[in-house]
Structure formats: C-alpha cells, structure tokens
Image (cartoon, rainbow, N blue to C red; front, side):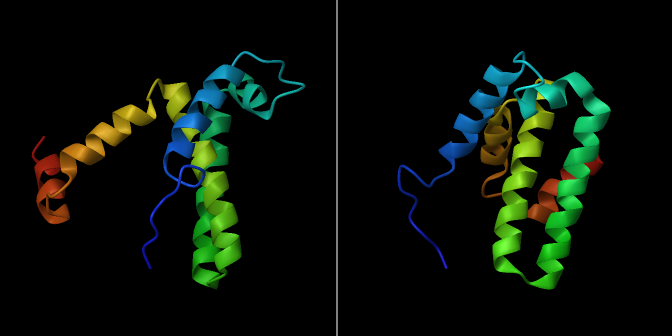
Amino acid sequence: MSQVPDNNNDATVLDRLSARIEASRNSDPNLSYTAKMFARGRAKIAQKFGEEAVETVIEFINNDRHAIVSESADLLYHLLLAWADAGVTPGDVWAELQRREGVSGLVEKASRQKQ
C-alpha cells in the first residue's frame, strides 16, 4: 500500500537525522548517545549497526509489524551513524540510488561484478 508522504512524515527525516548526528558528534558523551558512540569508535558503531540489523530481521521473520517499524528506526539511526563515521552523506547514497533508478537489479549487480 503506497502512501503520499507529507512534510512531517517523509524521507527528509533521514536528512534531518543525519544533520543532528553530525551536530552531536562532538557533544559530551555523558549527555549524548551519538557522541558516546563516536567516542567508542568504528568497531562499536559497526557492532551496534549489526545488532540492529539482526533484530530487524528477527522481527520481520516474526511478522511483528510494530516491532519491525521500531527496529527499522533503530537500524536507520545506526546506519546514518555509520555513514557519518565513514564520511558518507545521505546525499551520496541518494545520488547512487538515483543513478540506479530504472536499471534492472540484475543488470546493476552484474555491472558491479565486472569492476
């Protein structure tokens, strides 16, 4: 079922969240979870991202819609945190998705295997 996004509930929330993550990067780790994660380093960020991915998959298998939504929000936050740590912006990813738009997934995957 497709929904038309409104100004309060659309994909730009990811851009806003990304900006908040960057703004919190150098905050006090005792007051900011984001700053705490940056202070703990890339391995911890990767671990948390992986944990959230597994939790999302588990809820998908359990077919628990509410839990899928909740875990997906956690997963997206930790993905944005990982991107920020790696110097990747949402705009970088949006540009790649736009480049792939209209290209068969099979064709796109085959093109990556030749590189």
